[in-house]
Length: 114
Image (tube, rainbow, N blue to C red; front, side, top):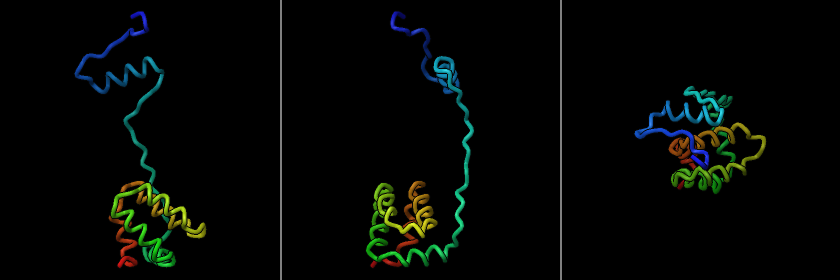
């Protein structure tokens, strides 16, 4: 009590009680609603494949193996090499990596892997 402990929560914790106490003591408000903002991609699959085919085979192979290794960090580093005029390709690959869609990335780049 002397160090400022003026409340407690009994085990087992109930999420609503925990969030209520945090709100009470920290002045924050919690909601259980998640906003899902769909990613707007204005590129067809055929155009995406066409633009990917313009990238070097070595780069595509690196992306493929990064996806096969489930390395979102490496993919995000590699996509920095995409030319700025291919911003839609950058966004597609980035979104796939951020959502752990490694199999999809592998599908898109497998034509360039021996």
